[in-house]
Image 1 (spheres, rainbow, N blue to C red):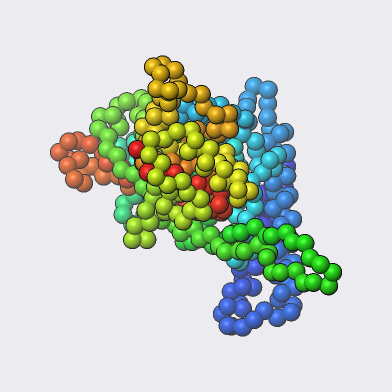
Image 2 (cartoon, rainbow, N blue to C red):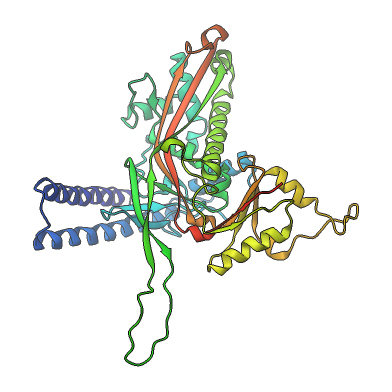
Length: 443
């Protein structure tokens, strides 16, 4: 069965190569497609869709057949550990791609991309091309990010033989600045852990891995209008309006310092390093995805700064009525309000609402608001909140994580420290702006 999956993946690569070669020929000769070339491209696209369906089905069968009574599904284990580390409330188990797979998107060149829901693991993404050394499982990746960093700093790979084998397999490279790219399995592990801690992902945002400097996909900007017409009258052109979503690979990173004694001596140093980076990455995602300003075209735009179809302004002292108003605005656009994000200060104000100012007589949260998933976070400014269907947010990511370390930069040499900078690239976009309502002016 695994051999069949390998053949299908090779077949998929061959089809994509043929499509790319055909497109390159037409672009190089600066001409339109011939009739035969159009037919060939259509045929290749149909073949690609068929192979993708077979790959998804084959992966689902592998996940089912490979599960033993004493061992949980690896995708579930990854998310369970990430949720436990993040203190996330347990929900439905993660389902492997194929049983309840991610949405399939295409760009302007009809290339396929998969949008992962929170329940999906990046490891089960059909295009990740992740391979592990023989005899190793994804559970062995716990702490790998930190073990590689420690080994690179100390030069001692004892206890990191698994990681050394991955590094030697060709799945990573050193870069020009003296750093390295985290191997694909390790990068995917870290990204999955960060997704489990991200407020935006927990609220429903989907993750869209892509492999170019930017990605443009179509979206519906307004719904069609249903009409009634008289006999022999014409329908008006009130169909859906389309525009596009552009995801740009912007650099997102974090910087941390550790004592060299910790790196060299502490037995739990790899887990500490990994958890530190995961928390920092999740916080950066939430900061940019919620309040990013798109400064000078470098910082991603967050949901609070993107153009909004629905707003509740000048809230003042917040009450549950403001959230009901926001939900009404969303429902008027046929959207489904599912979650709300606000600051801890706003959370305290809402939880402290009193009935007629009577001491300890707290106001009851209205049932519709109580049904929302509530996510207080320090990454949301105190004067803002947002209500919406966060499934309509895309977090685009490039899966490469570039790591650089130094023991001489700044004052790390005098303090006997190690400084680590880890960066990846990504962006944020809303597939339906009407699915969000911003509350502003909260005091």
